[in-house]
Length: 350
Image 1 (cartoon, rainbow, N blue to C red):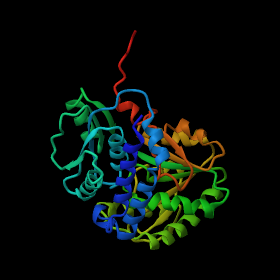
Image 2 (spheres, one colour; image 1 turned 90 degrees about the vertical axis):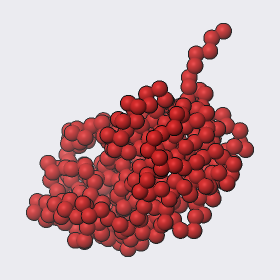
Image 3 (spheres, rainbow, N blue to C red; image 1 turned 30 degrees about the horizontal axis):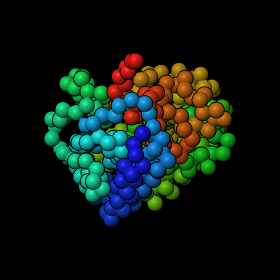
């Protein structure tokens, strides 16, 4: 376990990063209010209690590690850098060449606390004992092939959803709107769709409430730069909703809308700012509907009495609505504590 003084340095570095005067400049195109909210949430997850618990795992931590960031959720590398620096590793953060600003600010905050973290945009990774990487599946496969001797924690393309009963559609809609809009829908924890268990009217009521909630929240968290490629996807999905069900919200791409659609048209590819709502008769039907995405499901938000009921869908994480984008620091990845998978576990025999 890391000495408390080392953990204190990590926490001070995180506080220093959270105090950045212009989060928008670090965020790869988010609006200033959105960037500030996201940075505050990400830094707030790293508490002393959570950090010490995440560091308290068996094994020998790596002395050197690389963290490969990707465009999308600009704060995604923070938890891994904090964990590895807390474990005493020298950390090289590979920031996206097109969006290096957060990586540089992160490294500067940790360096100011005498923690060995540096940022680079070089494509060639250094020879390190451990590598954490986030990116598209092709990039992840390339890292796995070329760094097979390192201890690896690799995270490719994933998508998320919600499975709910929706007894209180207004409260639920407010929570799911936050899950949907944070980071402008760029990350793997953005819900692509909501499956509502029960009579079809439940789904209709939730879709209508979501249309209001998304529009209202977007006023507080304005849309940032939107990839032009999302325009056709937005028009396709909203058009389907108009023809096959109902559309609630606004017409402008990314501005916030919900579509009521038949479950046969479930699509777990995220369209930023849009959330599709589908009625299903049971959890078993929901599991069947999401089967084409098996192996690519990150998380499921649920209001079911027992969140474990959603695990048959094949997700790695179950949480309450409103918490998809704020996973606990130190949560398991692929069923293991994050530091454990990067530690060496030698056999020591008498």
